[in-house]
Image 1 (cartoon, one colour):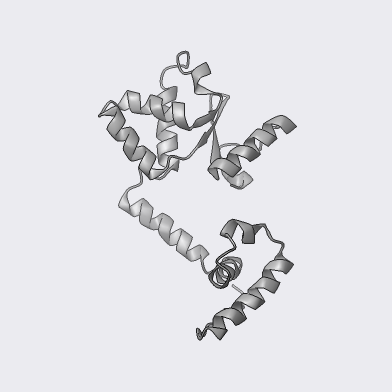
Image 2 (image 1 turned 90 degrees about the vertical axis):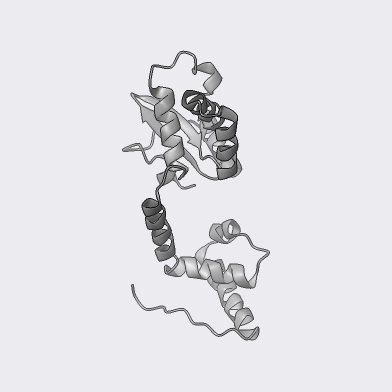
Length: 181
């Protein structure tokens, strides 16, 4: 998760002490994407809902939308800890938080919005840095995308050169267009 995702609801990032930053970094490692929403000067940090967990929640809540909203807040809000505020929170917060988490998780997207988001992701595949990363992954599956992204550009370019030759040696011909976009 990059800072833009984490602070998307803020005009500027809040001041974070070292201990809080360590906790946020741990959440990033565990959940990958975490987000911040502010409601009337109250900040809530949450994670996204995996599709399978959402289907299980729907079954568990058996059509009770308020119970579903409460369960979403209990399970996916990381800070503040829901047990400390869920019984005293102002009216509408639980529904607003649950709706935000569902929306950001992509669970409320219609076909049109899903297609738009997929198109946007596919358009990003034409960016040179993405093509380099995917070429490395194809030639060297032992590297994760996250690992390749963590490398500096010089290392990526060096490993990309090896990857290109490995792929060509396997009989697949390809070329990447380095023209200005």
